[in-house]
Every structure is written in C-alpha cells, then in structure tokens.
Image (cartoon, rainbow, N blue to C red; front, side, top):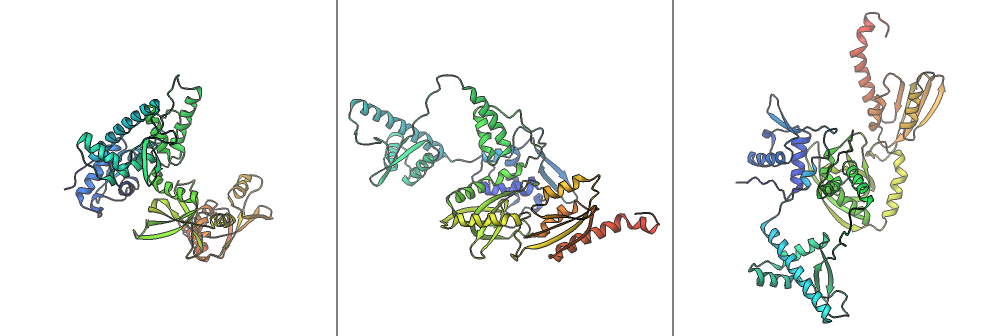
Amino acid sequence: MAEFQELIKNFDRIRDYMRQFYIYGFKARTEFDGKSARTYDNERRRIESWLADYTRADYTSKSKHVYINVDSKEIPQNPLYTAWKSKSFTDNDLMLHFFILDQMIEDGNENAGLAKAGAANPESPSPGGLTAGELCDRICADYGVVFDSQTVRLKLKEYESLGLLSAWKDKKQLRYRLAPLLAPETAGPSPAWDRLIMAVKFFQGAAPFGVVGSTILDREETDNEYFQFKHHFIVHTLEDGVLSDVLAAMKQGRAISFTNRSGRTGNVSQSRGLPLKIFVSTRTGRRYVCLYQENTRRFTNMRLDSMSDVTPLEIHSDYSRKQDLLKRNLDRLWGVSFSGSGRLEEICIKFYVNESTEAYVLDRLYREGRGGEIQRIRENEYLYSGAFFDTNEMLSWVKTFTGRILDIQGSNHFAVAKITYDWEKMYEMYCRDGEENGEEI
C-alpha cells in the first residue's frame, strides 16, 4: 500500500500530474489511468498540502475537477515554486550529512594543529583531507554505522557540486575537505545589499529559474512586496529543470537526446538534436527549444513542457556554423514552425485603411509585419506581401484585421481556404439576415 508523503523524489511525475489535473484541469479522478486511484489520492493530498490556499474544485455532469486558481495581483511569488523545494530524503541522507561534516571538521582541526607545529608537508598544496574509504572507516569506528563506500562517494561528490566540500587528486584517489568559509561579516549589510534584494524580488517573478530568487528570499526571511506581474506565466517553472539541462548542453555545444510526449496523442518517443536557441511566446509564455536534426538536416522546435530525461551527448564541432545558419532563417519564421516541406510559403493580403483616420492600422502593419513588404497601391489601399516557413501560423494575426481585408492569396491554399471559410461562416451568422431584409450591410 502506497503511503502519502509530502516530499517527492521524482519531479517529472509530479510535474506531469500538476499540469494535467491542476493547471489545465481537464482530467478527473476517474480518468487517472497512470496507476491506482489510491495513487491519485496521495498525489492530490501532496499538492494540496503545498497549495492549500490556491486549489479549487468544480463539479460537472461527469465528476469533480480540481484546479489551481490564482490572481497575479495578490500573490507575492509563484506558488508552484513549492514543488521545487519539496525534495525527499532518506534516513541515510540525514545521518551521512552530520557524520561527514563532523569528520571533516575534525580532520580540518587536526591539520590546522599540524600546520602550526610545522609537521604538515609544506610541499603539499592541499594537506589533509579524507578519501571516501577513509571516511567510511572513521564513521564505522566512531558511530558504529556501516555505509557502502559507493554511497559515501556519491554523497561527497554531491556536496562538492554544492560547494560544501573541495576535492583534489592525490595519486589515484580523490581527497575531500571542507571548502573555505566565507569571510565573516564584521559590520551590517552594505548599502548595496538592499538594492540587491530588491533586484532578487523582481527576478523571482520575471525571469526563468525564479525559484532561485525565491529560495534566496526564504533564506533572508523576506518576501516580495513591491512587484506585480500582469502576464505571470507561473506554470512554466515546472519545466525549468529541462531548460537548465538544455542550456547546459548549449553552453558546451553538445547535442542532446530526450523523451518527447505528444500533448495531443499522448505518444511517447525518443528524439535527439542539437539545441541552438530558446523561443518564448509573449502571448502564452510557452517555451520551445530550437534543434538542428542531423538525420533530416532541418531545424525544428520542440515544446519544453513535452520534454523529459534530457541527456547530453557528444560535442558538435560545427556548432557556431549551425547557429549562424539559424540566424539567417529567423526572418522567415513567423512563429515556431519551420513547416514540413522546407519551402517558403508566399502570402499577399490587400487591406483597406482610411488614411485620414486610421493611421494606427498602418503602424500595426509596419510594427507587427515581421519583415513583410508593405506597398501603397492606391488611396486607402495597401498590399502586404511576404514569404514565411508556415503561413498557417499567421492566421490568428490576420483575423485581427477582419473587416479591413479586401483580398487574400497565398501558396498555402489550405491556410487561405481555412480563413476564408471562417469569414464566410461569420458573414452567414451576422450579415445574412440584414441582407435578406433589404438593410444596408
């Protein structure tokens, strides 16, 4: 029988669960087919223990639906950060933490005494320190607890990555000791400190990896009381772990392999590619990684919220050239789709704009046209033309000019037919009755 615990070990599972049940809110308990209904109850209680003030429930004809309900004007920081701060640990983790630090402090004091007496080896740049084997022996002798040397070695490596320990090579073995402590504060905080904390309060809500800023505020026992965010895309913190792995690979010029789960079909597949750029939607906050795939020799964009298990692969020797190639193609990218054919799609739209009263419409065309050419063909009529990878992505933008478009033509006949069909249906719904009654439309 699975027991409920507030802390988690596998973040990918809780990330998937929070998105499907609490954020999008389209699944109910009866539709949970991943494991048993008891598992659903345990996961629900875990999330509600973190987000008790933000969870709501509605009843439909089918069943009960739970979801997260927040107002960006009322929350000082993203409530989903709590999930990142809820990592589980075992009894061994707890004991090893104190055993290792106790032995490292004792070893440091011993070597400090030797150095004062002149007994330490002056030629050794890093005297003292303990190997994983020596630490196991000491823990067994002093505390009567036996740990596997590999367990201790992994914990030492983890603490080195966190900056608690420093390591160096001694012949064929790694030796560890406590990292140098920061200089003690002899006076109060500097005048710049308050400004830095102010910057952290802004960062935790405005930037990726805002959970880092939130953790700093927790340490300082303060909160964000200054900043509110109108478009606060809180859900995307759940993929910050994936983003971190992708950015690390980009910094080293490495290819990656990953698991991709389709949001529409639920199909799971394994993919690989060379990550080159991160795209962020200003409308939804959704994030994509742009990959170059060697097998198809094409660029493609993958949603970060569909990716998991990112693994770094070999370093790509031609990384900078692929980045330059992507830059040359960005002007022809309307959204994030490079289409499937690899050919550019042309589109031409004729607009009616009252030049004396609607200059703002022209301003929009020039500002939002993304490199398309705009020509004045006669009084109050303008022609917009351009070539893009996927003109289907333009349709939502084109619809914002409904009522001003005189004609639309394009090489993607499906996209053109789709939008003209929508206009025809709209005309039938709102204008046909007036026309039949002889009224002026």
